[in-house]
Length: 121
Image 1 (tube, rainbow, N blue to C red):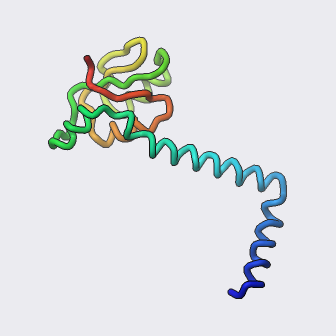
Image 2 (cartoon, rainbow, N blue to C red; image 1 turned 180 degrees about the vertical axis):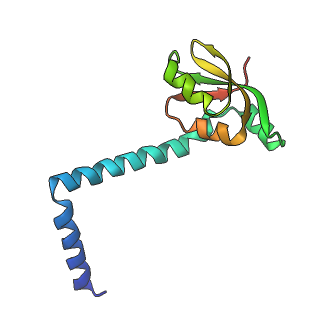
């Protein structure tokens, strides 16, 4: 496409995006996308080194892990964690999960309200 053709394409895109409702949808979609990207980047740092080492050593499931929150877990948080593994208990700032697979640990680490995933002390 020649130089003048690109100007026409960009002008056409600008006409569509300049409508307030379309612009709002585009901005919201970009913000949601950026938030999801940030969770993908930050997620692995929430998993303790000990858990990472266990999976590197070849474990397919961990017998017990603690998922820590910055708040007291409510029914919603507990039920969400039960989707990934068996519930082993609830504390003031998290839950214990039993027989957790590596894929579940990875998925849990991307949830924005999860602070840390570690072995119980």
